[in-house]
Amino acid sequence: MSEPCPSNFALDAFRLRIDDQVSSHVAGCARCQAWLTRQESLETRVAPLWQVPAGAPHPPRDRARQASGRAAPRPFWKILLGVGGPLALGVAALVLFALPRAPTETAKGGVSSVEIARLSEGVLSWLSGRDVLLPNDALRFFVKAKDPEDRYVLIGSVDGSSHLARFYPADSAGCSVSLPKAGEALDGSITLDDAAGPERLVVVLSHEPLCWPALTDAVTRLALDDASSGVLRSENVHAARLVFTKQQRAPR
Image (cartoon, rainbow, N blue to C red):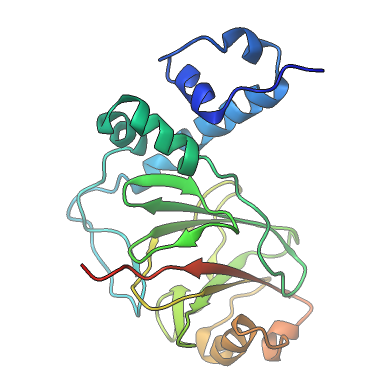
């Protein structure tokens, strides 16, 4: 029987050069090496995205807003290490390294992957289908198209009140934004408000730009688990529905 892999706690202690007791196991274990590579990727690929310059413009949002115009938060690994030794690493092992999972529900094929990075109370993680969203969570979207002709994306969300929030673009009269280069996040982050959940996200990819006035009803209905309708039924349009539980903050 092969030796069991060390805990995430032990692997992260090794990664941060705090404890090298698992070094011999890691040297011969492809699974642990892949885990460590994934954590390094999280730091190098995602954390710098929240280091925005102070004084940057802060455009208005409906019930969500792009996170800008605020002093940049400290990098998440510095926050964790500043909390204090084993406690910080324990938090990291429990909540920091959830791998992205497939959407909870897919409405229509075509979206190859939608990864969402979340900054929640100073902790950065990949959002998985089992995670619970909180008010003030900041989200960044990485969207990879399966159809090479898909060049535009539009994202909205419907909360527990059945109200549609327009994420990309935020303007109620706006049209799809261009997909960035492969592996890059959409511009800006989305900060969730305190509306009751669940949070039902709809990601719409298309060959040509689509505009909210023609899509609001169809996206809202799809978010609420109705059948695709209108423009969403087009051959050149691919939509995915992702559903996340959302917890309201307890009154202080």
